[in-house]
Length: 248
Image 1 (cartoon, rainbow, N blue to C red):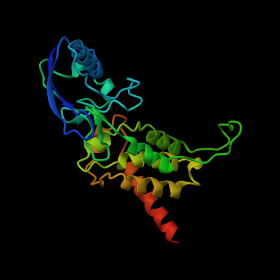
Image 2: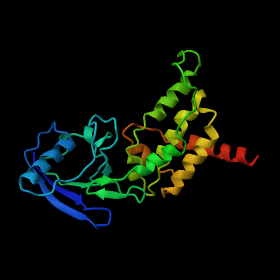
Image 3: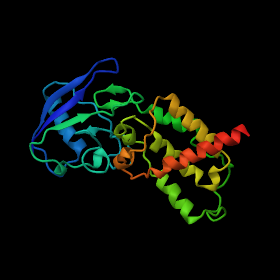
Image 4: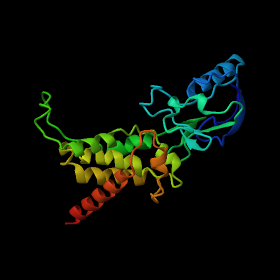
């Protein structure tokens, strides 16, 4: 399989950047999208040219670092991470446009690499629970309702890839923050910091410059872990309750 590529190249955050045309040749259908880029980079380096910079780590759909906009869709044509998108999902000879996430809060570092440190700062603002040190407690010592446990696990599935931000026309991070706020809020261990957590994390999200949610669900549709937009409603309810409790 052969693919014409239009790849965004940008030397650094100050550079204006632009699309550069490449040819991906001899691509095997079972290659992942990142393996295809590896082939292109090998050819570039053989010619003495600068390889295309892109983020990756686990290549197993776990870490969320392989964040690319492919033909206008976060992570590509299938609902999964970029590293788990395979070239058999494209038509031989199809032109593929590859871009980094486009959001003010995700500044481009180089080529297809963007800085998602804003997500880390949101988590640092309140994404924790306070527990006593010591030996591991008995797993059955603190009962957790099955429904609460399942909802908490659904929220905890978020890998922080940023596809929700990339898909949203307002570059909103509400789905990410909602998942991270709520998965702790469903558990008994998360109750002591519940009000402070939601206020601080939402406040940091606003400081980072993410846009507002207009409930069009692009984020939910693009999420590789199928995080439900109900987490946004849960976060909004917690935030309202926390603000009212503070005023009282």
